[in-house]
Amino acid sequence: MSNQQTDAKAAGAAKVDELDAVVIGAGFSGLYMLHRLRDELSMSVRVYETGDGVGGTWYWNRYPGARCDSESYIYCFSFSDELLQEWNWSGKYPEQPEILSYLNHVADRFDLRRDIQFSTRVTSALFREADNRWEIETDQGDRVSAQFLITAIGCISASNVPDIKGLDSFEGEWYHTGAWPHEPVDFNNKRVGIIGTGSSGVQSIPVIAERAGHLTVFQRTPQFTIPARHETVDQKFLEEVKANYDEIWHKARYSVGGIPADPVEVSALTVTAEERQAVYERGWAEGGFRFFFGTFGDIQVDRRANDTAAEFIRSKIRETVKDPEVAEKLLPTDHPFGSKRALIDTNYFETYNRDNVTLVDIRHNPIVEITSKGIRTEDGEYELDIIVFATGFDAMTGTFFKIDIRGRDGEALKDKWAEGPKTYLGLAAAGFPNMFMITGPGSPSVLSNMPVSIEQHVEWICDFIEHLREHDAEVAEAEREAEAAWVDHVNEAAEMTLFPLANSWYLGANIPGKPRVFMPYPGGVGNYREKCDEVAADGYEGFTLGAGRRGKRRTTRVS
Ligand code: N01
Image (cartoon, rainbow, N blue to C red; front, side):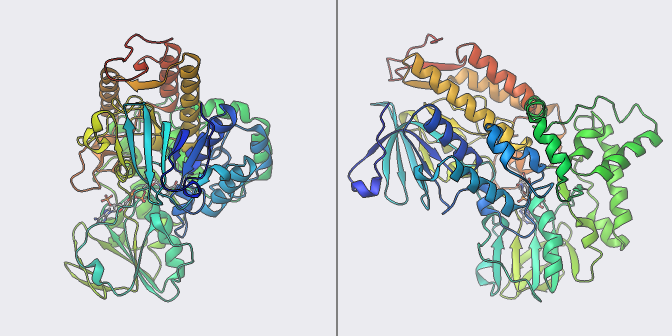
């Protein structure tokens, strides 16, 4: 393995640095990947990061109210006991600034910054068959070659600003929640309009409403959302957690969603109406994902069971929102509960009781255009000083497509995935040797507590690289048959759930023209981990290992 880490620009444009690995992105995934490759496998690694700091998602998503839906004690790395013991979370659900501080602490603690090149976007990555290396270029003129290319680019990082006529003519300010400015936005006495009521909208609407002169919410799809019951972390609870972390992480790693919840077997359909009501009331009072995972075992897979939870939430909306007409507009009726990303909130429905908040139902009164003064819907114009787009992301594939990634025979990843992403285990793609994806499409990723999935991927990739080194194998490539079988399995697993019944970004439905394919793996992080471990134990079944050159590929497995 080479150990050369000369700075590309310092060495001059003509010089091509030779690295063992290039990692794209310095969020949770990229930071841990760098630590493992560099400090445990002694590899030469460079991380390229578009932002001017670490944090990924938590660097970009600085909108008012941004916080994580996973509880803080499990929304962190588990790989270092010292790190777990020394860090003290203050919020039950950590706010964006606190998560960003945590990631900065991790970067400093493990001395990661010296191998991260900030303010640099990777523009292309081409696999050179002649010497089995990736050639990577950036918008800063870097040109490096690496044996391994590892994407740590996040699943929801390509912002989607919808193509609405007239945005250029708007004379006020506009922002996307996923690319929020670093300086505070002044909402004081301003007329603010927000489009979108997904996670970002539901979190930011109550906070913006408190600061703005007037807030108009443009809602296309009403959402199910559960009160988070946010509070400061109970210190006694944190002490107990710290004393029991091994057990907690074990449970999370073998769970469905990467959180240490005990599976609930009881069906919502086998209890009496009174018992069901009592369970939902308890879940509602506890709040957060406990309602989702801790009430009944079949609400995610059985429509009739799901209907009971959906009706309970609708009754809570009617109870909370004082104006019956507004409440009616807020009732989700066109998709099962949880089939779009499950949401949790703080004072979301209560916000519609405020005098300075107006709800516009753009499903029945569509946006026609953005004007110089605001937003015009079919029934009139809403004058605004600020427009906030909480309109989500070109998820899971969009960030890949911003980079010109080409594998064997110059095949573009964008072409390979034209009809939807095709991966083996969400970790690798046939035709793209030595490229590994952290939380790629086809892995549990966005359906899980991300750090748990990220750690599993990073560790699996490192074990695989060690295996390659031990066996003198230069190249690893997913086999097409294994990839096709995995894609089929992901689709079959999705068909067993209620996910396909909603128009969600999981299916690409939010981006006009995007193929409707369910992208994350819905089989649960525990099952997925076991499958990945089996693949490894079986000599990395489904991968061809070897020199990798055309005509010289070894088709027998090295184990
Ligand atoms: O984006 P979304 P998000 N005209 O795609 C609407 C993670 N996250 O940024 O439902 C009008 O969910 C769209 O309407 P519809 C989390 O995984 C986590 O909120 O498509 N409206 C929807 O209401 C999450 O799922 C956290 O009909 C348009 C909204 O915009 C993911 O990021 C916090 C429109 C987009 O919702 C994305 O969440 C934040 C158009 N043309 C985010 N296009 C936490 O952990 C879209 N919409 C807390």
